[in-house]
Image 1 (spheres, rainbow, N blue to C red):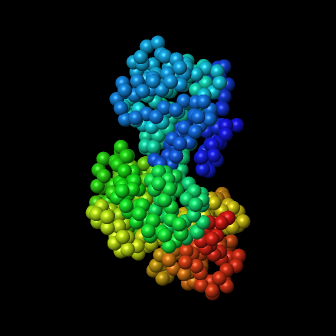
Image 2 (cartoon, one colour):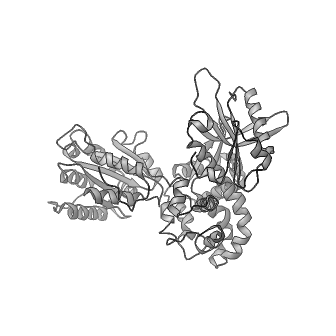
Image 3 (cartoon, rainbow, N blue to C red):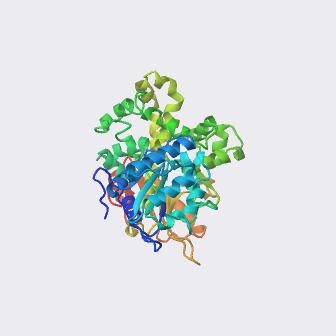
Length: 491
């Protein structure tokens, strides 16, 4: 067992995966042969923090690459290897062929984790590096007799995702592929020390579950209570002296595949403004639909947006910004940037607050409700959720469309209609009434006509502002009410 340091909050499963990889021993060579692992995730999620801790606990080696020429990177790597092994190479490394061979030969016997962080910096300058690793990890390579457990880490999601994809040299070589995600919304509330569910959602709608924003970017400043929330936004997120102020811009600028920042910001602004379809985004940006396909694909590869299917209309998709801070920047900060730089955060926030609640918190609350549904066990909806998302149900008789915020489907069974476990509506700032339940009931009837199995469908109202008495009285096995306390309690 490799002890997880107390300073690491949560990350239990991630640590277990790293622990298993670090101790893994294939049946090749005296030490089992070298193993390769790939660790990725968006910036500020604590990847380096986690891997540094692993190296410390196991006596492994940690090397953080920098943006440098190949020659300088080789010198820095040689110095790091010498410091760790206390052995000086017989001759300077001419290239990465020499460096990787020496690395594997330096660690014989017991398994030893070796972390190369910010690997994309190296592979961008030396595109052949993945091929060199493939050769040395393969039959006859220097890794055959090595105990190295090599972990390649990086934040450039498009680069890291392609390391093991398709015809990439390292495809099939990795014994670990670990993605470090932001904290889940309940864990994020605990991490921020927030016990009030309403405050937790407001904070999460801005900073999400990114660990670095809790201490490094706010110096540990968290809102004390709901009454302190507005002041907290003004003194941290909208304060030009705080790192959070420019962070959303940097997140986009750090992605090497983004060549036209103005276009990409406009695409993100379109989504943040509620234009979530391909056509809606194109109209907002002022381009044709086929002209924004590439920017959307790049943003998706960078894990900045997600394409989510309409569960009732095959081939239809909507787009959602994955990083809440970017949504907040595009919807609130970007259009008032000049004023914010002149320290007018109080006036800007006062006028922007209604837009924050409708454009930012409302859609974010819907996303949290879908996450709540994904985490549910079989007892809540009558079976385990297989697909959770949103969808639109056409109502031809009334010539309208019913938007369903939270759709929960059971696993598809061969030869049987798809079972709809639940249809739900989420409202952040509106007290929910029987009118909302009636809309869901109408959608259930329409889906039954279309051939779905709705015999056990539960209607669900997810309310951020509560429920009317008549709706509470109607709640039974067929109608589920989920308030903020339940959202942050057990599913």
